[in-house]
Image 1 (tube, helix red, strand yellow):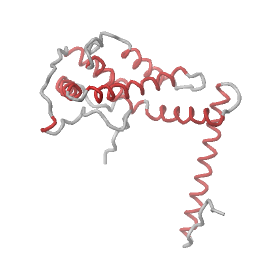
Image 2 (cartoon, one colour; image 1 turned 60 degrees about the horizontal axis):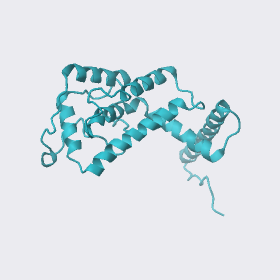
Image 3 (cartoon, one colour; image 1 turned 120 degrees about the vertical axis):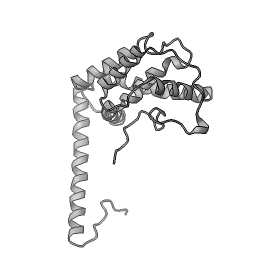
Image 4 (cartoon, one colour; image 1 turned 180 degrees about the vertical axis):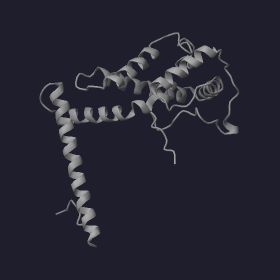
Length: 210
């Protein structure tokens, strides 16, 4: 069974599948997309995440028509939610307390370099649709960054709530130490539960209300 790829939001872009017939929009506004530019974009997508869906003109036009057919506020939310995920990745990349692996950092730099261009696959000056290629790049390559982004968000929450002392390295070391301790405790409780079930006994709850 193929598991779905993680996506930056709970509502994935309808890129790999066509919308139901009664939801399909005509291919308007039609965009002039150069085959070479599409091929370069597709190559970048698969450089960042080799298992991503293929990008072609038909899918791009269909996605553009879908976005253009949404109510303006909803279309803006689709774009803004993914751009916020991009800002989360930027924060992660520039946080001195978070040491990304060199290979991941190179992929992040390639992602940032693309979205910072004004004249990319779809020029940013095109109203609304000018950011479609940027958010699609974030969407399709998110699985390459999702695990790291989740860990970073957890670290930020830990740092905000626990206020670990020391410099950046010490704060991250404290987070790793505490999370490993939590994992070890969970594994210990799981072994106790398995032992009780193997012996035909119902395990006692870990926490008791007194």
